[in-house]
Image (cartoon, rainbow over all chains, first blue to last red; front, side, top):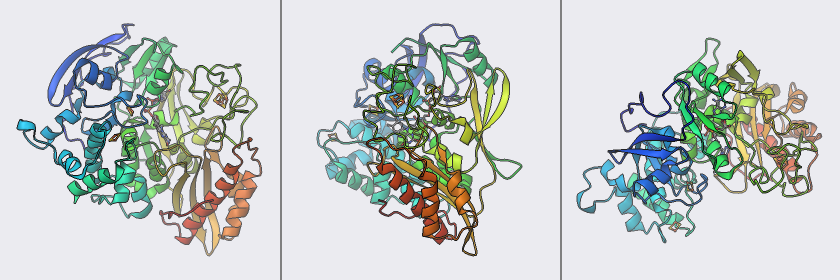
Length: 199
Length: 338
Ligand SMILES: Cc1cc2nc3c(=O)[nH]c(=O)nc-3n(C[C@H](O)[C@H](O)[C@H](O)COP(=O)(O)OP(=O)(O)OC[C@H]3O[C@@H](n4cnc5c(N)ncnc54)[C@H](O)[C@@H]3O)c2cc1C
Ligand code: SF4
Ligand code: FES
Ligand code: FES
């Protein structure tokens, strides 16, 4: 599943024996392939580090409580809600945001898009666009989970033994993408865009 | 949010020692519940001891033919593990029925067991709540309680435990391995979570600075197992009612059965009365209904959640019938439950 080499985590915050009571930490996040060293209040989430400290405003803050998926990014190749991740706990992590998606598939000069981004454009997979960065990162994660044979709740009710990639039917896509809400209701075209790139 | 210090222990004993020395600290697993509650001001630790990188993320078969699940195993890895999918399908299905793909990628086995109730008053620091502030009262009893308990609640608290995973573990006779300043011990999963009584601030029997090390499953029950969840939307919502069951039928009779309900109580509700009524009985819808009714006779629904009793009965009958008709195969088919 992991699409990145395991990061070196032998050093970093909180590594000394007795915890001193400082409430800030220096961490290195590898964001879209570039190491970024930051000194942050321990309360800072990965989402706030990206948006407020690194000027990467692609990942959105919808609910800030894990409920909407607008903040979805890939951490060490896996999709997760960045609003619930303390940055201090992710020292050394490899983070891919919507700004770095295209580079996952090749050099992204001249504004090249990830195939899924192109499919969203072709399919009109959005209206206001607020949920879109999260939808894209989530879908990239969901596609690799299915390719690795990971089941979903609807797979587990119908499929046989584990192993081979799970084909992404519309029902599978809807279930796997249920952590990403879209207030504009662009769901049908989001499902269509994901189907397009997995066909 | 209160400022907090952070430490990442290198081994289990260092993690326990860090908390034992700092009573205002808490363990950090994936953070998907803890960070949420810290933002809401429901919990305000002064120290986070990060246990998510301890070497506790292993799933392995035990010598006795069971399964050892480290407390650091992420929910998505647990659900996808071949041994879990093939031998304990109810557990895989229960985990997959919970939260979202993103949250399951981050949430850990230990954190899932110790997640707090979703009672609205518990999450709102502007309201009284005996679980959050002992002695302040329980506004849910006469207020918004449609999602809350019908079994085993008390005057002090009518909350439910929200975990799907724990319901399957309860049905599968899991054992929780704990390690703390006083050493190691094991607790049956069905005894790990508590009923609220007059101490609703205690969700479980875990002691200060005690770490969940692992959950151990005995060999899978003969026959099949399954998990079904009913909720207000098709996906990504907490259970109104859920059922985990394992059933072995021989010559048309129930040889063995395990049944647990979620969404009904302050803990996963292992339905021993129903199991007792079913052992040796014909594996028919009538027996399943009678057994579920026997269990739910103890229900004391609140003003707005009586629907849960009938829902729980019908869901149990459907899950057991599905397991019976499939000769115990894993799948439980979709259908209307009402
Ligand atoms: C929007 C949303 C929807 C959700 N829907 C569902 C759902 O439908 N079904 C469901 O079951 N769950 C659901 N969840 C809850 C989710 O499953 C939990 O948040 C998650 O399992 C907690 O795991 P964690 O590792 O992130 O725990 P954390 O948040 O890190 O910790 C939770 C608690 O456990 C303690 N802890 C963590 N690890 C250990 C350990 N090893 N030993 C001792 N104590 C420990 C922490 O101190 C804390 O008190 C949902 C969550 C969100 C945000
Ligand atoms: S039901 Fe329990 S958690 Fe909810 S308000 Fe009452 S005491 Fe608090
Ligand atoms: S902002 Fe993170 S899930 Fe809504
Ligand atoms: S496009 Fe507007 S929220 Fe999804």
